[in-house]
Length: 206
Image 1 (cartoon, helix red, strand yellow):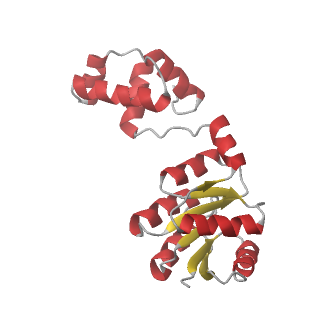
Image 2 (tube, helix red, strand yellow):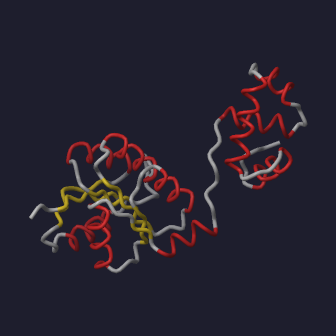
Image 3 (tube, helix red, strand yellow):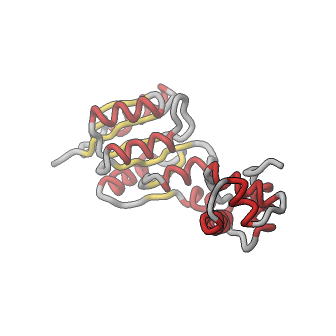
C-alpha cells in the first residue's frame, strides 16, 4: 500500500505536533515533515515532495495563499489543503484560485480531516460548508493591476477614454480593453458604478 505523504505548514508548533500525532496513527498516511511559515513550506515541499500539504493561511514570512501558489507552480502534482481557524475570505479564495484542492476549518473532527486528505490526494476537492457560505457572503476583493488602478483613478476624475490614453501613453483601444477588464472584475455596468465599487472596497483612494 502506497502511503500518502503529508507536509504540515503552520506557525504554531503545538498545532503541527498535534496534527502529526493524529495523522501518524493512520497506516495509509505518512507525515514527512512540517514547516513554520509559508516560505519554509515551499522549501520543504521541494525537498520532501509530499502528496498533500496541510496549509494554514495566516503565517509570517509568506502567507499560506502565496505559498500555495508557489508550491502548485513548482510541484504541479502536490495537492494543497487549506486548514485555517480564521475567517479570511480573501486569503482562502486566493489559495483556492491558486490551485488549493480544498479548505477546512481547524475545528473539524480528525476523522473528517483524514478523509479530506485522502480525497484531495486522489484528485478530489473538499470545501467546508461554513467556508463555502463565507465565500458566498463575503466575496473576495478583486485584484487589480497597477495600470487598472491608474485607469480607475482617471475615470474617477471624469477623463474620457481618449484623455486617459493620452495621459498614460496608451492607445484608445488598449484603454477600452482595460476598462472592460475592470468592469468584469468589479461586476460593474459602467464607469460610475466601477468607481463606486472600487471606493467601497477600498481599491481606490481619491
